[in-house]
Length: 192
Image (cartoon, rainbow, N blue to C red; front, side):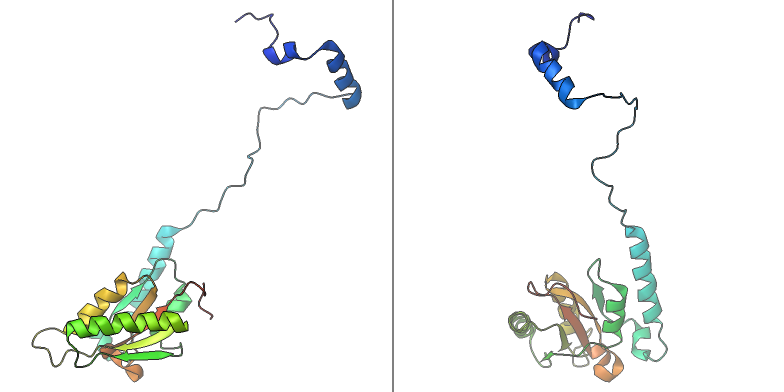
């Protein structure tokens, strides 16, 4: 490209327009800098690994609670969606949320329990229920492992409205029941 040739934009501006612009702007001082300020501020980094580590410590801390003797046998159920606040999980595990609805699955077949749980969760969503107790039993009537307990554990993890669940404290059903926190579209947060 020819060094002496003016850029195309300068060729399109007439001398008259150029002089009118200089009169309107007035005296100008050229600033020499090679740095450009970012147009948008950078977002703060989210400490994903730190959050995961804190959640793991919390799980370990509560699994060793001495007054929850059933928990030592590995029978406890626990699930929490990523991003749920640690104090919310702690309150759930300690049974500090008021139970607003309850479902007892004792004596049901797997199919009956699945249908009853689906209906129950739909009804809870309709009524905007937040904390529920689901009694699945300890499986003492089963020949090997507690069937309904394992199924409920799996089914609840697949439901989007289930934010967290944990085996209930001993005074609220112990490992034969669980407390679940539900989230609905018309309520975005759990009130602490």
